[in-house]
Image (cartoon, rainbow, N blue to C red):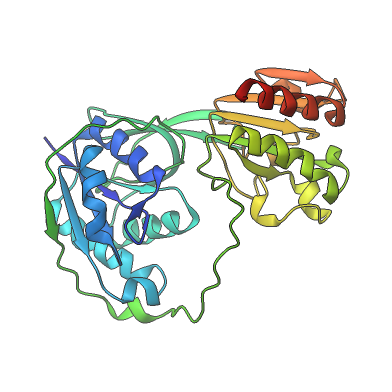
Length: 320
């Protein structure tokens, strides 16, 4: 059976959920071979094996932390040359897409970004994408070289599939370009205790209808009861009510959670492009003609200041 390379997104050995989703998808295409780089790479082996990795290629060097992107591209290129995989899967983060694009150029292959599903095809992996601001769904495959595919978080349910815990050192020679962009400082992001927006299974968002930064406390209260991430529309961000890092939309972040709750959001195409692939969409808006109601699974026509606190209290009661 062909091998499929999976790039491991981890922090000091703690593997992030999108990587486990990639392993689930990789098993549809062949035998997953994980590539873990940097500090703590060897510590990822156990959980990767629990989710189907038949082999984990590891390499640790200071370059991965000290320089941007290119050392990781060098390592993935070395892995491709060592394994000759049927495909390379990478999480669809900002860094992941840059790594994937650079790798595809290096190895002379086609690339597919932001896939939401994968299946095996007679002529290689077939990727499902949501395109043109989520107005269409397409199926595509790479016709040249080794397919390089980035996959959106929450595209598949993680499934455990214990495999042999085999760890091998990956031989990597860094190129001259690897030290071209040096990291000069790092500032830890202040933790809110909530999930990462792009990886969260539930996202609760607020828009223009929230009507002020102080009113986002209502949105946050609901999110905290659900264990959800907090999102915001462009209108709310442009008004200075919530940070740009939480913006959902074409010029913000794309999310694909199991549940998306839009509060006071009209549903402009810019916002829809960033959340339309959510599995279940709920909207609360006092305007019954708001475009958001065209794509929801459940809609509540009402004032969010009445509806959201009641919903939060009901969830709290049921949890108690």
